[in-house]
Image 1: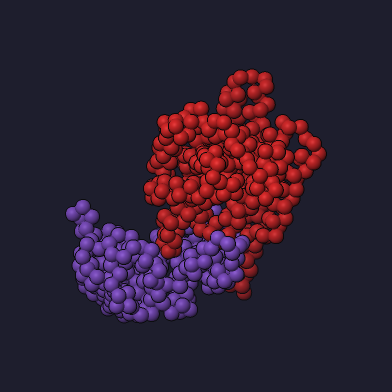
Image 2 (image 1 turned 60 degrees about the vertical axis):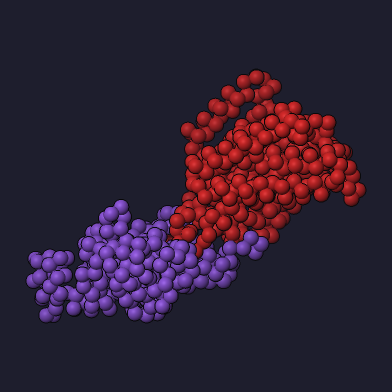
Length: 335
Length: 256
């Protein structure tokens, strides 16, 4: 139950803040950090549509990230497409792939769903590795991604690329926000909470899950496209299972019950990574310890903790209303 | 309204329902009683399509619905509340009812925003009013008291505007006073919505006082049916279910 205008205002504010970064001449390192953050942020945010809102824990989400990246990169390298054309093509290809993979996976629950998505991801990863003539195998898409001008926009220019990515990123976040606050978003929550009961209310659980799976894959594909534009290439590790694992880490680090939680988790994970890498080569060890502390100590993401406090206060108020009503009813009966 | 003809269902050779034929009149309020394992909940599962009957027909307004999917049957107008309330723990009462109403009205749209839409909210409010849940509108389903959880479970079924409502032990796990309050609410909503209502109940005082007709199940078949007075004095029922010791009290009840 949220206000749409407030959300749109916040999205606009976020975009303005992102665009102010190059205006103030921030060092390239910070701009690069933000661009990586936007690409991986979309991966984590879209995955949380499945994990946090629908209760579908997918271990294979990075395959759609890689699908967007490779489809876009290959379309651009073919020279037959403009950037918007390749953008749409890559999303369309990912949607089709998600439709096929999803149609098989969403019929299963919990661990079976998780492992089947993981299996499809390994299959996709091995196709990328094996089909050397098409995908470049373990070397990735070599030779750079051409970025011809379109509508007067030149993505070979770092600043223009940054602006383009920021706009695409904020639009995707706004789309995700629209999904989770819409009536459909509450159908997702019903399925997460109790899918048997949802089915008993006439909801077509499989179709709703499939629709959610495809939408989430499309947003992940946009993340992959942004990354491809940014690094001017696509690499098999975009679709390796560790990338899916990282996305799950991001959700854990931020919080799955708060809309922007995964994005905060992305920033935390990348910051941890960038800071520790300058001091030690054992970055995984540091990450592991942080995650261990979160999982064992908090048992939830830091933002989840804040949200829970806030929810508890709201619940206390609602219960006070009930107790007052019950007391009135009691005195009414006694009188 | 709802007719069951020669329904049979076995699970791995164990007959849970053997040849059940029952007729529930349009707008009636009926109770189903029977000892544990008599097949009462199985009967509800058959009617709602949780699993199909082995043989037999289920007629809803003269249309055979046996073998249809659970979802189709819900859409045709059979709602159900569960013995253990089946809720959406992280949704508040108001949210859950609006979400159920939007499922019924098929307004699970992506573009219209935000949740809840006014039409579904209005339907949810009406149900809260009817069941006395307005006072807990903002409470998460998982934080509700046991009685309010059972009411919300019924409320979710009501959001489907069912022609036939099945309540599986609405008073399960309640104290004596709470039971009567619950059954009064059930009677009130039956009168307000003019639907065919069937409930499973263990408390004989409640059954005989509230129901228009009573069906007694035993070992998967119909042992007796009729008005409360007819069933109460039926010797087969007294022997099989009420027990010989209950004869005296039920006799007194009939005399009074």
